Length: 226
Picture 1 (cartoon, helix red, strand yellow):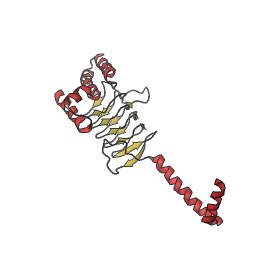
Picture 2 (cartoon, rainbow, N blue to C red):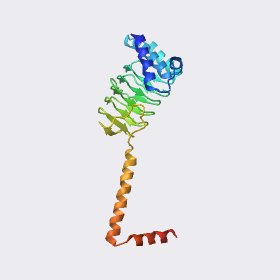
Picture 3 (tube, helix red, strand yellow):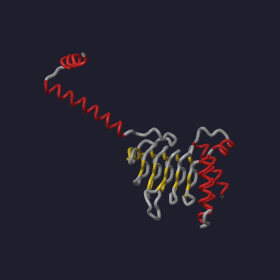
Picture 4 (cartoon, rainbow, N blue to C red):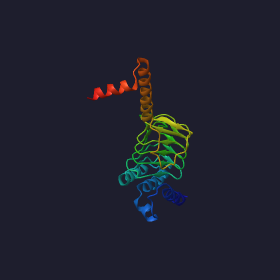
């Protein structure tokens, strides 16, 4: 059973990372794989309520990989941490199948509350570099979280989230390839673009009301520049 999971983990790396060239390279040079294997072992000890050892293994894994996964976190199949440095996954986090996480991601809590205090990620989720998903919230199936976003509320299925705090900028829209987590709408840019067009329209209306012709406007601009 454990060997089958490792085989799936390796296949997932080849499927999701175009930089993966051969098996030896994946086995020796992918800290995300090393951290995941260590976590699967530590999680077994954690479920058997063996004290100290699971946390020691987690700390050992963090030292060598730069990835901190609490042994209590529940992780599904085909999970891939790309690059991995700085990734933190909290104790009560639940991760579904076919989830992709980039470097610097935090799946954490928001305080000292007890019980379920970390996020739940469903299937086919992509979390971009540096994103923070905080609290006992649910990230639905096929969700994309943009790089650097801070998500503190539930996200429905088939959505794209960006910004601080995270805002849903696409829902049940055109499907984005999961490796292209940088191809997401920019709501601030869109708002400024709309504002620019609105100002241009207002200028035209003002010129028409005042009776300024295009020639007058050109002469005024020329005199202002001189």
